[in-house]
Image (cartoon, rainbow, N blue to C red; front, side, top):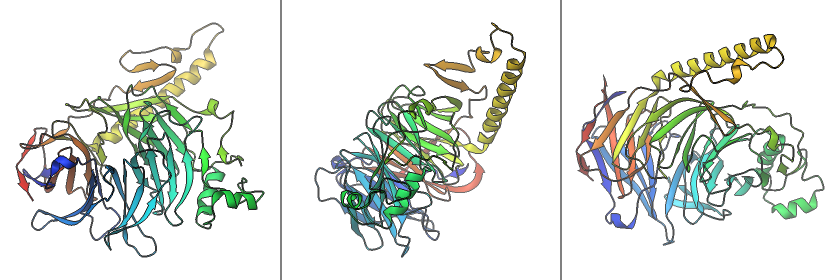
Length: 463
């Protein structure tokens, strides 16, 4: 990583006792202006941008929600596909998702339906009108902003058993990952005919679900018009064995995953043992996707590739950030520090993992071919306590190269608050962190000189 300024910018609310900041998100949809970001917390929404020439922070817009019971936890950017206007989605304690058009400075839509707090929201990477939301009501919802329809609900029989804390959408837009207070991580496919048909139908209908279903006898068919929302009970992957506490942040890294659990100062990069098929030949036509035979097909095995450790973290609802180009990983802690890892070495670990799996597969095939009745396969034995671990029926293989190099540590002499979330600008020139004391801390990349592993002190500038 190139060198960062040895000072940072700070912005604090006039009365910080009234709010904590929980969410931060850069707007990556505007190619001309990738240094605009949003911060949310309490009843407050702040839109800000950086001035590269002055190395200064400018507050563009501020909003205060009229509902005194609101406490915003998350925000996400999108764009109006018709006029190109920037859209910001915000949500939190009331469970109401609000959509702001920041070009006119007002809320234009509100999505209601969740039965509890909304902890995280994510837009579909290929369709800016589709929004996913994770809630305290144990479910994830997919919304269509064009028609204000709830399209799909992920939850129920094999869904989460506690509040859902984090979600992320695969870059292809074909898979969704979720995690929650039940210690579980689940992967859901968006590729079944019924889901694809429902999403398509949601653009063409403004009728109420019940009215629409009464008029069309084949409304539950993948060839007809589907009632909204479709209920998806069955993920394609589920494990509660990787983490032993609330899983409060999960992110895709290609086909791999990164996750962290409460009170654990460690981010895990791992491979779910499931085939991510973009095309599903399923003939399921019920509005309840899946059936009695499906749970036996849910995969639960995983392989740990490497772990990124940091310090001073025994809390939950702390979310890490990955840069737009997937080069950098950053997380805050409760001591006001930011840990940053450079992923330029990650392909080495992935290559190691692939070769290791090939060797295991080859060894297993050979052993099966020469195995005699009553003998024990070498592939079923632990070859090393340090590299292989069996956990409650789910295998977790830790690579011998699973110790990634030490992180860069950023800290300010005056920031001692809990850092709840970190995000990168699209070009990785800026890093923004939001804190429990209603402060925003920003660091700027100013050169090409490689930085060492020593901590960098920051002298705050009040704005």
